[in-house]
Image (cartoon, rainbow, N blue to C red; front, side, top):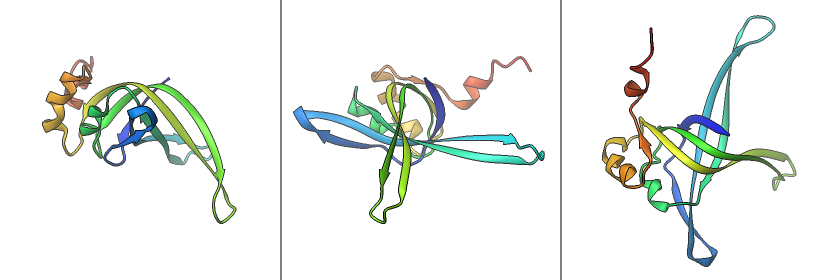
Length: 131
């Protein structure tokens, strides 16, 4: 599955068992549609993402960066301390494509190239449109 959205906060690297590291970050996806009455409805979906391949990618996953992620989605549910039921979406990321826009985007591009992550600016992606 592929999703495109913006990173909501700078990525965090956590150490887990067996000396492995995971990069955790969250992505927001905005969508809009017209309801039956004809009103425009805006909807935001949040995904909690995990990337296990290289912790170096955390340097370029900064707040506001537009990313395209490939991976698997799963849902989770839990009861809070107040007894209220909560739900969320996880995205186990296997590939990341950057479109830029984060607060450290320009400084991070050399790291992205070293990691073989595709980096493109928003303008580059939309220059080839036929209209």
